[in-house]
Image (cartoon, rainbow, N blue to C red; front, side, top):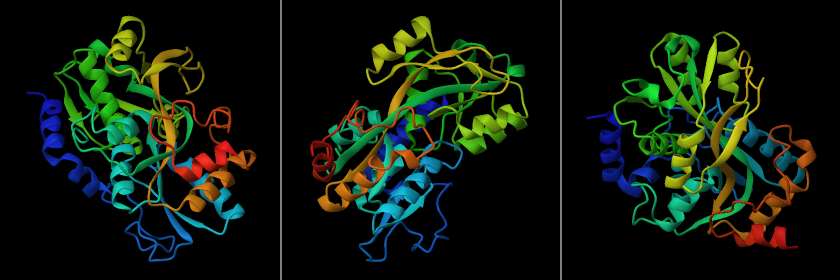
Length: 329
């Protein structure tokens, strides 16, 4: 039996309580070196907000730190940005209050809020989850090394695949895609983007799924020292994936995005978004939202996509009243 099936049984057994327990326990977790309590709390200081991001090798973490700089320059709040296992873990952090804001995928947000979609949330809706804004497409990148003889999704049968951190949106998307395309015979590894790049370079895995806005730093670093191949999810494969999961949209990684990858690669994408929980005060959410979207010129990451006009495109859950106050003003 594939480790994928074993993993699904594990996630189903842990349920939403396990998701919440993951919060703050990621292998990429913050160390509290910025003066925080190190456990995601703000020590009772209402001017300190905890913001959960993702792995340091993806887009969530550097973008979150740019947002931290903008928010702290334009409000009285201090943001404690923490590296985490990303979307599913971050939902748990928002649910139990150990995070005030987090970046998550729009599909994971919908699953969590509606108690459906994946085993971790099935019949366990996260009712206090609220949306703030959508940001940019998160591209599904299936990366391997040129010498691994993997040129199509079908070649993944029997391979060792890093599907992303345990409990991350990347893992969920990877498993969705593999299941849609009938790939069940594979060995699953779970690690963040940076470690996955090291695993590829060392020959410990054959391929890795990475979900994030291109270019992803960990893939850029790998491409500078290795010959990469980005495996396309196109044609009938792409249609099958979208038929099984309506939140996927067509996407293309432009030629030249990564060193040595000279042709555009067709794939699919989900949407990155800012989320919070219903207990965060409306004026806090409105103030932070205004600081971000009134000062977009101070950001350098994904600036072609992040706009106030598009900030509700693909919003998959109920908007927090503070965010609504800003966008409706």
